[in-house]
Length: 274
Image (tube, rainbow, N blue to C red; front, side, top):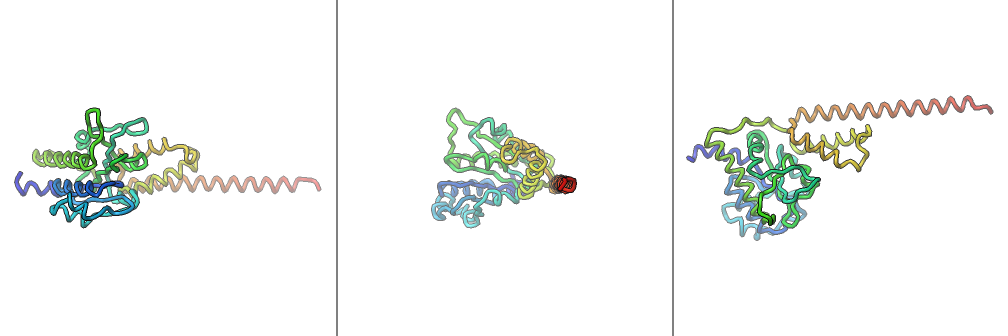
């Protein structure tokens, strides 16, 4: 592919970022930076308490990816790290009844590609010893598992390499064949979505649909449904408007009931003989 044809590939890959949650080894962060530089991904984000040792990261990043280490974005909270992103692809080696149906990275790239033009896309990876927890996977629009034979224990850097390669290869092929899928519209970012989900949970709890802390299953299902749709910022505002009106109506009903009970109490006292 000639240099001119590489330009759209670079532009699209620049929309993606690697997000590492609580990496335990600085060397794996350095390897991730090196992989990102090779695949044209321009941002590396860490979510952890303390920054890993810079020199150990640079050792495996090499000079070509040193700029990614120098410009690392560091957050304490995953929600803050993902706030600017419109689409999040999470990785998991574990499957179970509490986890959504997952596909291989190659299968999911057909859904990721349309997002790249108008949305920032995060590739999310968990720590080496446990991967992403359910609480962290709730931010994901999609979850992927890298197929292995019996022994599902890939090194973090290996997992990053496979996922980044699949994304880069899919973009290359689509551009080369001039068959890039129709672009998805700009989605509401994760910061807007999380605020909406909090509002939805508050409204559903207020009207009694959720029982307050005991209905994680229903909120998880709502998150998966709305996350899969890909809501635009305007649509998020509409849903939050419905939530505000629901909460207002519920408040009015409480006030009316309270006033009714107060009047009944007063009338009862008036009718009581001395």
